[in-house]
Image 1 (cartoon, helix red, strand yellow):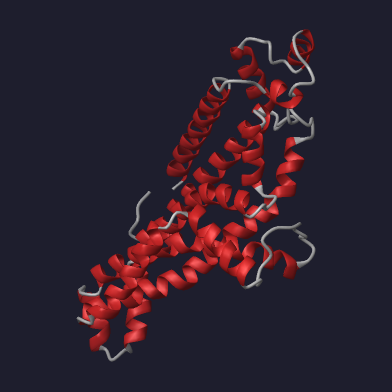
Image 2 (cartoon, rainbow, N blue to C red):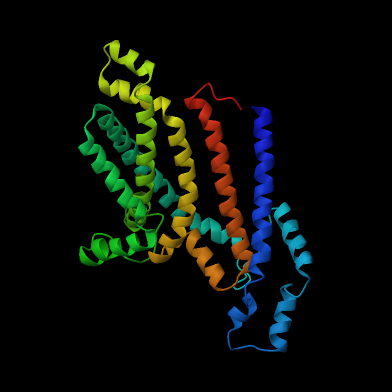
Length: 315
């Protein structure tokens, strides 16, 4: 276990370093720079060159890269190029919104998808194809709908037509009710695709184990179908489901960027879009590092959780 953990931590470090390096040099290949985006038509010529020099943008790329890695080594993420505000403070201010959306999405997905997938597997096992086909069909339709289109449809229906949820506005973390109303639609939008994927994986995994000997033995002992289904079948089919839950966080990282931008939520995704539009190298690099770190840590934690569901797993 210790050897496995150390190997995975080494892989984590190499992965994050590779992401940082790729993003660092890719951002500088994009036409334009943050100084031009920030100054607009107000500055030109020598004034722009002077600002670039003051912010270290005229140094060789390799030297800029080494300076950036040196800052990361001491957890110094620096300031944004355009506003000169501390990046870490901006991330901490935006983090509650993104975390609320991500956790709400995962909770709603698990709450709905696992029972639906288990029910579909049971119906398919018993030969009741109608309900199984209905659940599978709805899941496929939800999986095909892109989040940006679903966001716009939900805005039109639930915000503009019915007026149940605000389409925009400030987010007050100290007011749970207001916070819930603001993140409810984004959670609903992101949950649709996640529910579709997880329900289908759950159905496939549970259906595979329903014909196993230990399931028939549990039935022969007189246990109820509900207990057999969730105590034995679902537990032994949990490894693929746990994998999907872990990967869902990766999908959420992509989805929250689009959803936060459409719903004008001040989260990490909106910070990233703003940083890209303004060519803010420091902001984009730090946020991509943040996303990469979260993704690899979640995958690492998912691997460790396997042992809880199946003691046979060897690291």
